[in-house]
Amino acid sequence: MKSRNILLALPCALLSLSAMAAGNHAGSHGESTIGKPGAVSKVSRTVSVDMRDDMRFYSSSFNVKQGETIRFVVKNSGKVKHEMVLGTQKDLKEHDEVMKKNPEMEHADANMVTVAPGKTGEIIWEFTKAGKVDFACLQPGHYDAGMKGLVNVAGGGSASLAATPGMVSVATSDTKKETTVTHAGMADGDIRKIDLDNRKITIKHGEIKNLDMPGMTMVFQVKDVALLSKAKEGDKIRFSAEKAGNAIVVTDIQPTK
Image (cartoon, rainbow, N blue to C red; front, side, top):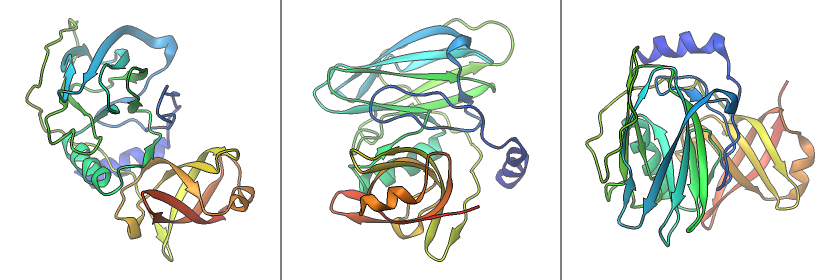
């Protein structure tokens, strides 16, 4: 079933993106079983989510209608960093394991937002398919502590927006995986942003095998600022990355045609 989903998704390429506020979240996400990045012009409702240090979302359960575009305004009322990540239960668990190994990694996907204490961010998301969409905080230890929630997407008809405080049971769902290819120890990627001043590059990448990291969109440091002169935003590249302390650093960039 997963292979079939991949084949169906490939002709669609990647759909238009929605920039996220806070925490360097400004990446992209193709349409999948959880939906796709939403357009501001299509927002039908704004939903407030509060993240607290008791490792709970307030609220943690929402009902929406298939086809709705929701603006999640996500506030961090705690004293530590929290985030809200939409996904399937399987993908959230996998991502949580990656975060445990790389606690300082910066993401840049449209289905998530990281919020510093006392700050507010947002996710704009279109729920294109009926079913269940999970969400969680994937800061190290927070998922295991129960910081999870659920969006119930009703197919057809109207759905009232309900909210329930505290933790809820999280249902299992599935999602497509983007195909990834590695070449001679390098990963494939698309450059989303180049930050020369801070020596950072945002890459939507495939699997990075040497780091045991699945495909996602991430903000990397670069070993040598000269590497940033090899490519520009929008380019497809092959690159190498490795851990340097708590950071993940790009050590080589090779543009591809």
